[in-house]
Image (tube, rainbow, N blue to C red; front, top):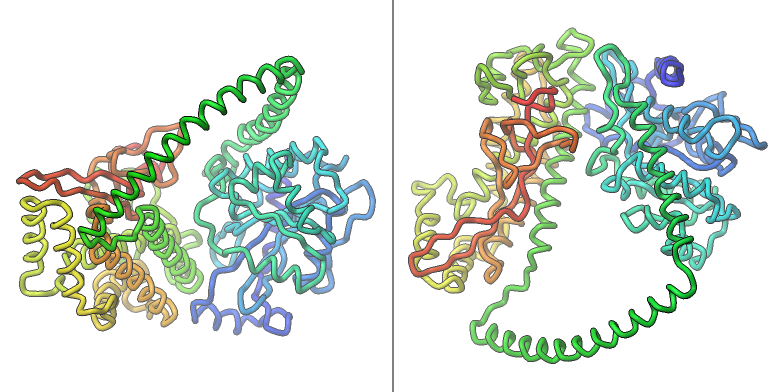
Length: 607
């Protein structure tokens, strides 16, 4: 019904591809568009505008985007003027391309919130025709407009926020910004961030609450705060899938889950309010006061013991002359930064290659099975007959070209960085005559010597090999060239054919060099600075090994099914930590962060 109608509307509205705007605000020509893609410009930031009717969505939509002679009508009464989702033309802010999606307003008699959610999911999941292939909208973030004069205690608002949270999922909430339209002061913002506010459940999990005046500079500033590529997909893309017949599978069930989410929250609040009487509150207060007094007494004693222990620890560190100021949380954050850089590179290059070269495959929706040199592509990624690989499943269709390039590049980077940066004792030894000598020597030192002595030996030896420099730029450039020549260029040739001039742009090569530099900086911390924490080592699982839940997590995992039986490839590095026990004792590493792997479930299979 709604989904079928919306499919026709999306197809009609997207038959003419949108073009990025020039600096003067007018749409760029097709020649300019092709020139921009050839230089590898940043991906488009696509932002969905949500909010109640008459919140200013359509006014903002008309103000920022260029809509020619067909601006959106602004709602002025209790009924909707905006009845369908509407995608703007591409426009630039400070050199970054943006698109906005206008939406019907919540809390009207024309459409229920669930109907609006249904339309929104349909628009984001169903692909539309873009040039010679089908393309889906990659949502970068949501801008929810809340008029300052609207009360925050409205039950409909609470239901809408609960539904929105369930729609995208908690990990995606940092991509949501709540804009208070009007002249909101800091006290008003603080109240909306408080625990009694309907927005607290979003704000406490990463969503931002900001004031917004409907003026062009203010609107542009808030749009620039969105990242074009979110760190994960919203829940809706995991719950609803496009079937082979074009039907959205799981849509009705997911809408029912969204409705149940806000109804359950409302029921819990009502039961809680009724259950507490004045007498129960007083009894609870007295019990809590008694417990608090006991805890304060114990805390005072523990604080004294802690001060004594800290004094002894500081004295011990001084005697050992340790200068290890690195915390494990900082190491984990640095690894996440590296993984994010790997993700961004894979996505941006995949989108550019498909936009620029997919037409050469002479097929509307090409997959890996349509590669120019399919057999060589299988060899490159270790495909084995009788099992699935990233190139081809055991049965059925292969991955789309864009998804394959994205995941393949991530895997090639993970494998290469582990091989030439993290596994050698020092990256400059990877191409030496005896690349494993120092690593073997250090393992013997760890086995025989005290842990602190072994760690200090490792740090001092690594710094000596670094010759006082954190980075060796000639070696980094050489590693980047080898990575492009040995891995990335063969991948592109196998896909598009060697007769096509398919290659990374200079901007993409610079992005790759920056990524390898980030890996070098992390390696310098792990081997040259960390002493007391132990030995950290990034983790990359081999292709085709059995899936191990202790060391791996599945890409796009689902609680409704078991993970696949094998790890097809690693696309995000994990992290292990081992401690030397000395006295001839070896120690097995513990997994701090599991590696993210692709399994056959990406094809809907289990093997």
